[in-house]
Length: 426
Image 1 (cartoon, one colour):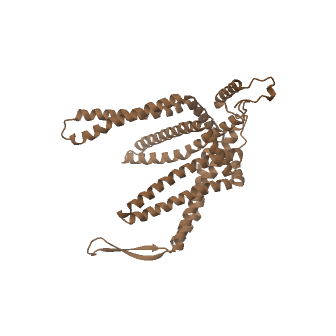
Image 2 (cartoon, helix red, strand yellow):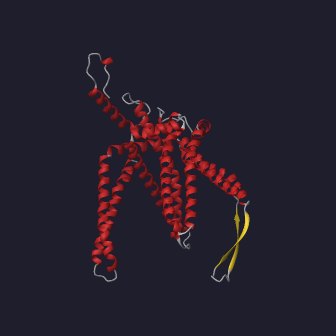
Image 3 (tube, helix red, strand yellow):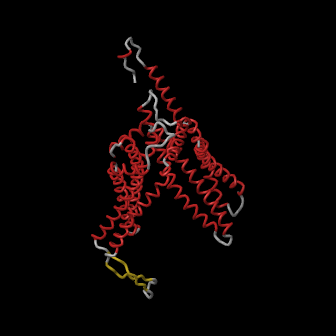
């Protein structure tokens, strides 16, 4: 696992260096082709930008390598967190299949939602429209359309909001359930034995005690998505108005970008708030506040662990896609040699395997985030006294932190005759 994570981390400067080398060799190739009349028109433009771009990528590669050297200890923490997260997932094996339960819940919701949508769509008034293909209107095609009154249109917007809120609620319930399972694994002393948790008991506790937290957090995301849908509708109307409304369209695009950034930030805050809820039982507002200040106090750790875990997930998904595509190619060639367009089938398998791998690696990503918050909370609650809960993957790191804190307290202590009344300088 450690070698795999370090490989994922080293891949960042390697990719930058490879891109820099590619642009640098492109500049050399343009120098070789100079004088060829077929390429003279484009060589100047290519050679003008390829060399500076290569220097930029080489600089990014050097900067990324320096960051890896500077943050090597925190990368060691990220390796320990990822290992502990993998063990927590192995301790609750049904958690890997929890996305399937979420899909079943979403399909259950979609059945009545589709029924109401079709019923609402049938309430439109039929209006025949004519489409002409020539200027003299000699060839016309008549096709039916449906027009809806204002109340029916409001019904469509209401159903869209129900779709946003319900889907985000299902995601929020899943995040709380998974965080509860992995946090119970962390705060269990004997991790080699049976862990007193399961997906079903965590789901029952979440639905009975934390459904309001999930509903409130998902409501915030649903409102942002609803505003984005309205802005998209306005953008469509602006584009239909013609080129005279380009300024309004640009303003709407900027507003849409701001909403996308806001949604991503709120998803990140919600995820960490749900973890706080699973660990300490906080409501959404208190959990979001505690998560925000926890991230603020440990910004570098959170950034490094998040980056390393994200790169690890990407490498995992790429490996899965590669293996699935290769196996599909070999299987089709061996059992169905007469099939044509094997490459298109393999591309379809690659896309499908990517989405499936993304769905299941999100479980490991949730485990990494939960174990990281548990570790930080454990460190803050038991710093200097030692913790019985920290897993062996993180035990060495926590001992180093405790030793450093003890050394700092000894160095900053006020030497007085009565140590019982002597405060420590913080």
